[in-house]
Every structure is written in structure tokens, then in C-alpha cells.
Image (cartoon, rainbow, N blue to C red; front, side, top):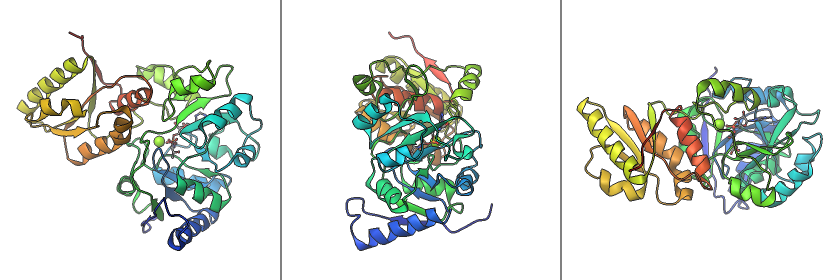
Length: 361
Ligand code: TXA
Ligand code: MG
């Protein structure tokens, strides 16, 4: 791939009306129009955007990420008119969900209109659409006046980026421009809901919880649990890209599940055992575990206290431990309520399914 210089432009998301911000947004919009790719922040993770109606532009996304063409892209819009230009029909459920959660971290799978290139949908009859709630994402899509296809701006199979630096680490030399809007506030990707089936079903848990969705549509089904790789290949045909090892850091990662006490003790024991074998161990824990790990000798990254904090710090935590050069990452689990479902999904994927379930004592 031809190397290019990657420019990082910091924008103040609270002052996009300023001349500098306007100038840079207009420049980014021109790049999109010219068929180039541009990285921009969303409230979930950073996205690698291209004109969704131009297959040659969208192709650059796949090449930069080294993503297989069988993995379709989410199309980002700034208003409801954008939706109408992409889909063959809008089910009543979609209108209800849009009214409740857009702009925000919800992606809907809807019947694709004829104008959506097959490259975007990987040849599926359906298209994924999302209206992000980040001032820079919204201003960029508006300025460009086109729907913007954007996956997370990481190398394929790597951890999603929640800062401009994460994007730069993965894609420098492969993209012309990163709009830097600071750290993403939600930190896990959007919830994907399939509205092309009889019963609305979550394909990927994310920033909007199952409980919140059910307040609008009580019949929404949770994602199907996938524990094995064999089952996973089956699911992959329906929801491409939902493979178990999708979000892996470059070092082996293990997830521990059980009571807080059992997780803490077992992780501590494993730290000691691995250190005896000369391994450098990284642990991903919560603030409430910090005292227990104080003198453990492990490299510690705390995800915080609340599920919101855990979601926001999760990907940064995985990348920080990876960059610290640890041989293994041991990670505790959190409740599966609310945002916790998305957190567990990402941890499970980071661990590639390597889960140690502990008997609660
Ligand atoms: O929060 C997010 O959703 C971020 C930001 C940038 O918006 N985007 C994101 O995109 O996570 P990506 O490409 O990393 O993940 C999108 C997932 C993939 O697993 C893809 O297979 C699935 O959505 N997807 C896209 N179109 C689909 C379709 N028509 N049917 C089923 N799954 C689809
Ligand atoms: Mg992704």
C-alpha cells in the first residue's frame, strides 16, 4: 500500500462555530467528496469514514484496515432524510427506535435501497444505519452532504480506538487525516439491532442497553450467546464480523468470571504463578480491587467504578497493557446488566473465548 502522511487535526467539539473548526471541517468534507477516507470521532469509538455511495471510496476503508470485503459497513447519517435515501422501507419499529435513541449509539439493520453499493452491505439485502451523537461526526456528515460509511478506525481484528492516538498507532501512513475530538465518551461501539427479522433482535450489544430498547419495543431479543468457534462460524454468516476474536489485543487475554472475591483471589494466585515462570502479567480490574493488587507486581489498569466508566476505559485499558509489553492480560468480569452486556461481550471477544468460570464460595 502506498504510504501517505497522516495529519492529526485537533478540533474543539464545543466550539465548532469557530473559523478554524469550520475550515478544517470543510477540508475534511472536501476529502470525503473527492473519494478520500477521513477518521472522525463518534461518541462510541473513532470511525474511518468514506462516501457510502462511492464504491471506490469505500474500498479504501477495507484496504486501510485490511478488512475482508465480506464484513459490511455501517452507514452514518446526520438526519432522518439521510435514512430515507438509504433504505427500501422504514418499519414502524425503526421510527420508534429512531425517535427514542437517535442521535446515539444505536445501529439499525434495515432493507437496503437500490442506491446502496453492494460493497457496503457485502452483498446482503440489508444495510446498517446509524445517526451518531457527536458534534464533530454530525457536523462532518452535514458539511459533506453525503451518507458516510465508517467502521471502527482500527486494523482489522484489533481493539477499537477511543482516542486519536489509538487510530494513529494502527493506521498511520495509510490515511490522510484524523479529526481529533478527544476521548470517546461511551467507549464501546453502538448496539446493532436487526429489524429485518420477525422479532427485533440484537446482533451486537453496545451503547444502548437491552433494558432501554425494551422500554420502547418490549419484544426485543438479546443477542444469541456464542461460546464456541464452531457456533461462531454459523452466526458469522448472519452477522458478519461478529466473530469471537474480533477485538483481540495482541497478547493472550483471559477473562475470569465469578463472585468479586473469587475473581480477585484467583487472578492474584495466577499472577504469582505466572511471575514464577518469568512472565510479566497485566491485570484489568476495578477500583474496588486496587488495594488487593497493590503489591502484586502485576501491571495494573483499573477500569473504574461504574459500568459507564468501565465501558469508557475498556479499550484504552487493553491497548495500554499491550503497549506495556505484558506477556498475558488477566481480566475480571462485571455484571451483565445494562451496559454490562456490551462490556462482557467485548471482554469475551478480547479473550477469544478463553473464560475461567469460578465456583463462587
Ligand atoms: O459504534 C459503532 O458502531 C462504530 C462507530 C464508528 O459508528 N462503528 C463500528 O463499525 O463499530 P464496525 O464496522 O467496526 O462494526 C460494525 C458491525 C460489523 O460487525 C458488521 O459486520 C456489522 O456491523 N454489520 C454491518 N452491516 C451489516 C448488515 N447489513 N447486516 C448485519 N451486520 C452488519
Ligand atoms: Mg470494528
